[in-house]
Length: 236
Image (cartoon, rainbow, N blue to C red; front, side):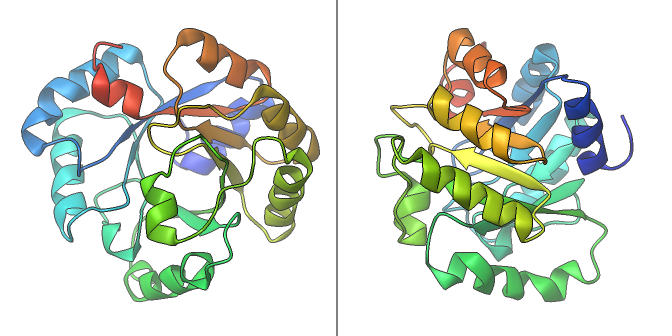
């Protein structure tokens, strides 16, 4: 793999190769579980491990990532719920802007708070447009961000939001149905967003079956993220 996480995603996406990330939430997975979980992630041949959550205690992310690094060589990408979840021990950071919401705290304020740390950081910083799609649950992201998700039926709004993110210079677009979503991001929405952007597309939230995984890939997802399904069944 090339040194840059973003360059790797771009290169393989151009070739039509699909990528898989396992999302681990330090609020739901203990450090004691990391050795066993790392082995199972290696067996799955995941391309990345995403680390993040909405309600993580300050300092835990750093300890969690340090432990992961001792047990796997899979690149670790931070998927932070707020600026305190940033650590130099990871390989890259999804520098998220919550484009689907209208709360300035998650559009720019959290990003500003992270700057003093990031200016001296060795992390690869990847500007990412984060778009919440209604997954049928009041996810922790919605509660914390105090925003609403885009309806699964409002495909045009989802497309326009993704394109606006691309025009603003985002390098990735992330469509997220939320942790433990009852409904995955629908195929038509994924397909239409992919047709209208020229940057890689990440899809996650509620994906529990091989069929759902294939549907996301077949409709344009370059990288699929599995979280809750792996937490509930680490032999997935």
